[in-house]
Image (cartoon, rainbow, N blue to C red; front, top):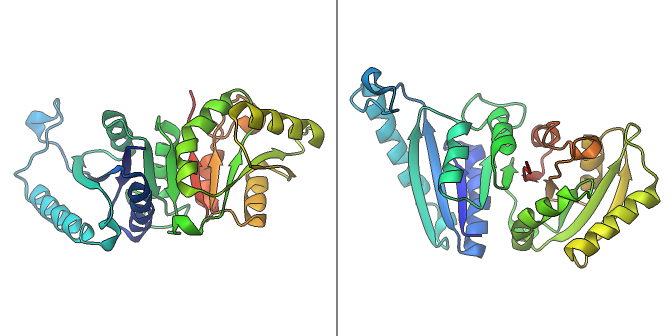
Length: 278
């Protein structure tokens, strides 16, 4: 892992996410990119090429304020052991700019704060975090509250363990390795997508062998819905992170397509790690 991107609006929520990202960057010696989005009207004469009118008072004020906020943030001790921190400002955009920046910089992981379904309607409210989760081509870690990486003893990887899940697991593996936590391979059984436990366990164990996952916990869990099952299982093992990510077209595999990851971001206090596979 070489490059980590953190969108920030300088809110408490973004600060929590930045602390997690700084810890990951410290352990991996990755470059940490901090990006702040300012929604400023474009100059009428330059709208076709997307240039900002830097002369209007609002632009001047916002630029000065953002500079001060970055200066204050970068003094925080969380960055003391980070190899390299690069801050930047972009204009006239929200989640689209984050996704574009991630592609431009070949980012390995986006770490975002999320207010969940409640909170102020600013840059990092739940809907924008959900949007990045659905559009980003790299893994996204959504953080609602800070928890030291060293204190996270369990991670739940919930999947249908189809062929597509192999790519997801490999994409998320570098993040799993950073946390060094016990990994739980979980398949949810629901009334609408029922499957005998022995068949589910067989598919999980076959998957473990295919990806050479080593010493992991394999489990099935029955509940009324995938979302409830994942949350209840995660609570039962005191997991700090819930990881999602297959791209199957039906059943449990509709994680991202069916907005399950988005619902978990809103309703769970766990970190949500997701990966979109096209």
